[in-house]
Length: 171
Image 1 (cartoon, one colour):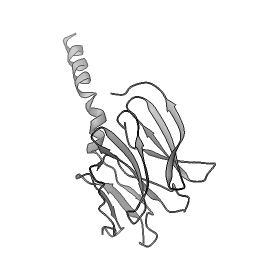
Image 2 (cartoon, helix red, strand yellow):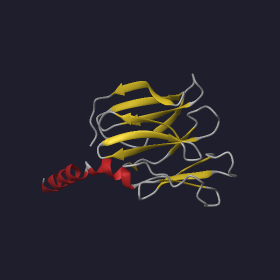
Image 3 (spheres, rainbow, N blue to C red):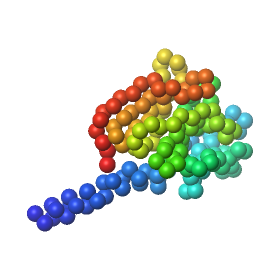
Image 4 (tube, one colour):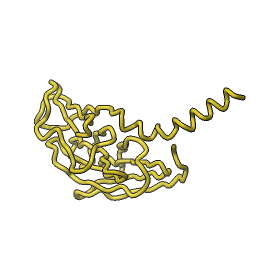
C-alpha cells in the first residue's frame, strides 16, 4: 500500500513537468532549405531560444541565427513545403509569457508568415502533413486542453483548415 502511494505521489508531482520539459529538448530538422547552398541544411533551436540553420559543412547560413523580439522558440523546427515551391520552409513555435505564435521562415531567415495561438499551452512539436488538395504541406498544432488545429498557408497567411477539439486536458 505504501509503495502505491509513493508511486502515485511521484506521478502526480512529475506529470505537469512533462509539458514544460519539451522546451528543453530540441531535435534538429534536416532537409533542403536553401536552393543556393549545396547539400542538406540543418535547422535547430538553440539553448538561448534562437533559430540556427547550418550548411552540410557546418557553417551558419546567412540570416541566421534568428531571434524574434520578446519571444523564444520553444519547439523543434519542422521543415515543410508550405508554399508549394518545392523548397522546404522552416516552421517553428515561439513563446512570449503564456502566448504562443506559429512562424514560417524561408532559407534566408525572412518571415513568410505567422499566426498567434489562441488557447492553452502548445503541447508538443508541430507536425507537417501533406494536403492532397493543394499539394502543399499543412501544419498541425496541438495544445494541452485537447485542441488540435490544422493550418494551411496560402497567399502569405496561415488559415485554419480544420479544428478538432478532443476536450481532454493533458498534464
